[in-house]
Structure formats: C-alpha cells, structure tokens
Length: 254
Image (cartoon, rainbow, N blue to C red; front, side, top):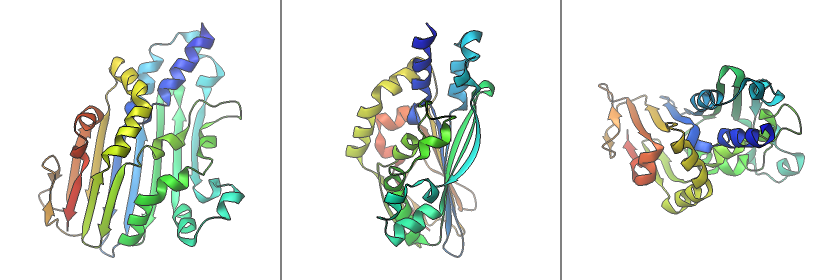
C-alpha cells in the first residue's frame, strides 16, 4: 500500500503550475536595470496532501527531506555544456540564481529564480532564453537528498514558463502568450491539472511590475495600476488562463 501511495503523492508534488502559487516580480530601476524573480510556492498543496496521509507514511525517509539551498545556474551546468555556450549565455547563467526551501513535515516547499538584468536588452535576452539554459542544467539535484530520490524536478517549473513572446525596451514591456506553446504545455500536464482540480487545490498566478517612473499606457483591463502609476499588478489563476490565455498578455508603456 505504501509503495503505491508514495508515487501518487510525489506525482502531485511535481505538479508544475497546477499545484503552485506562482508570482512574477519585476523591479525596474531608474538606471535601466531590472531585477526579475519567479516564485513558486507549493506549500498549500503540500499541506493538503499531508492531511491525506497516515502517520506511517509521513514517517518515511521521503518525507524527512529538508532543503535550504541556493545555486547559481552556471555552476549547475556540466562542463560539456559550458564549453558550448556563447558569452551571452554564460553571463545569463552566471547572473541567475535558484533558491529552494523545502520541509515536507512542516508543509513547506518554495522555489525562487532570480536574475539581475543590467538593461532592457539584457532583460529581453533573459526572458527569451532562460528556459533554454535551465534545460541543460542539473537543477533537479538541488531538490534531492540522494541519487535515488527522483521525486521532485525543479527544472519543470521553470521550463513551463516558455510560452511567451517578449519585446522589452527602455520604455516598454510587452508580453504576448504563444497559444501554440501554451497548448502544448497544457497537453503535457493535463493529468496534473485534473488532479489538482479534483483535490480542490487553488492555482493563483500573480504578476507584479514596479517602475521607476509612471506608466503611460497599459492594455490589459485586469491589470491594476497604483495611484502613483508606478506599480502594475495582474492577478488571475490557472483556470482562467486555460479558458482565456490572452488574460496574461501585457503591453505596458512607461
């Protein structure tokens, strides 16, 4: 019984965005630089799943996993991959970091990916290429306690973001969802979304953009602009995104 139950539980923990509170943060500075951070919080899903398990299952080594780790993307790449990278790819990887906080017994599982872009061109390059860089890395090792533990793969969380087309300049931030790529993502994860929905696990998605100067124009009616016009917040959920992917489109002039 235990052997059959554990794979089901950990399949749910690998749920990509379907069991994750996703937050994107962009902090644009007056000098043109921007700090971008992706936060993936699976803690609520973990808490729900823990309530379904018996004490004997909770006492297994898999549920004793504790991680509080930071890793630079470049250091996670094998030597063979590093040797094939361009200077731009190397700089991107070196300026990107992954942080994992995991304690299943306490219902904690959070992953964050951060990058410091020096200007608009750097930010655009990062947004267009980060999923390609991580696909060659060994990020899954960060969330393992040993070589036999294959329960959680952080790479899937980041790779799942590769369905946007970006245009970024010093005065605009445009993001349009690529419906073909998004549909491919949904097809790959449809069973996971169904599982999350059946377990009544919510799937919120929040985008926060902070600007050094007032926003001149924004096209998304769901996006909330602050009184000083320097902060944009788009709040939705995966159910809404699945029904209408265009809800994630953003065209912001500032």
